[in-house]
Length: 102
Image (cartoon, rainbow, N blue to C red):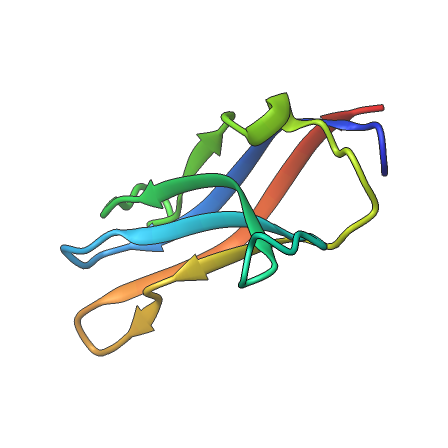
């Protein structure tokens, strides 16, 4: 909700390859100086990692533009790039947890 502050986003993922996945937290914005209409809120990487018992690990992301404050009602969204599933390599997301205060 508008006025809330995002404290952390915890990503639960598996990456058995040698390449990172990219975590991008964006918001749509009516900004005539931003041609894509998207403003970056946070950017991070999900490096190769796996752990027991099911090879999924977690990464806590706690750095956000404006201290995580939701300033307006425009759409915020998370994009995960470079996912894959082959016989030898898996880069996938199981889920996420968003912690915020109102």
